[in-house]
Image 1 (cartoon, rainbow, N blue to C red):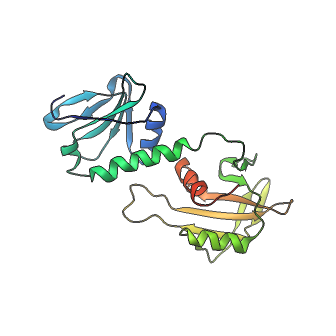
Image 2 (cartoon, rainbow, N blue to C red):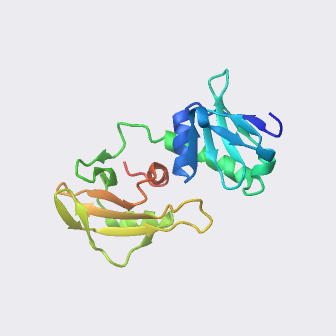
Image 3 (cartoon, one colour):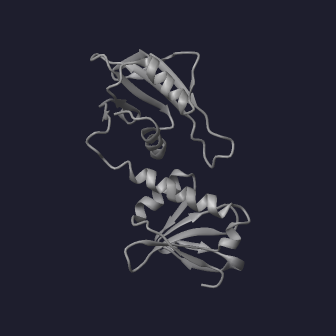
Length: 210
C-alpha cells in the first residue's frame, strides 16, 4: 500500500458513506473506477472514494468484520486539510444522516407538489418557537413574504434564518417559515437547506419538532 494508511472504523453502510460525502459537497467515486490517489501517483482501490481538493483522496473498503476501513495517504491529505477535523466531520455527518431513517414519531410530511420542503408539527406558540430558534443560532427575518403552501400560498407567522459560517465546506444556510394550518398548529417550510438531508437531521437534533 506504500504511503497509504488503513484505519478501522465502525461504519457499516457503503451507500450511506457515499451519501455523506455528497452531502458534504465532495465528488464521490464507486465501482471499478474508484481509486484513492496517493503519493507520487500511487493508487489504491476502494468501494467508495471521496475526491478531495489536491492530489490525495479518502476511500472506504469493507473488511472481514462487516465494517469499513478508511484508506488514505494521511500525510498528503494534511497538505490541504486538517486530518482530524475532516475525518471526525465525516463520522459525525454519517451518524446524523443515519439518524434520518424513517421513524413513526417524526413529523408528518405534507402531500403537496413541494412536499419535500414541508413538515407538519404539533407546535402552536410562535413566540416560544422564535425564542428556541434564536437559542440555536437563527435570526428573525424582517420581511414575511407569502410562501407556497399546498394548493396556494400563505403568509408565514414566523420566519427565521441561519447562515453558513465562512469556514464551512458547503453552503448550509437555512431559512424556515412557520405557517398556521387549519387545525391551529404550525407547519414548517424549509425553503432553503432541505436539499441536504443532514441539515434537516441537524434541525431535528437541535430542536425537537415532534
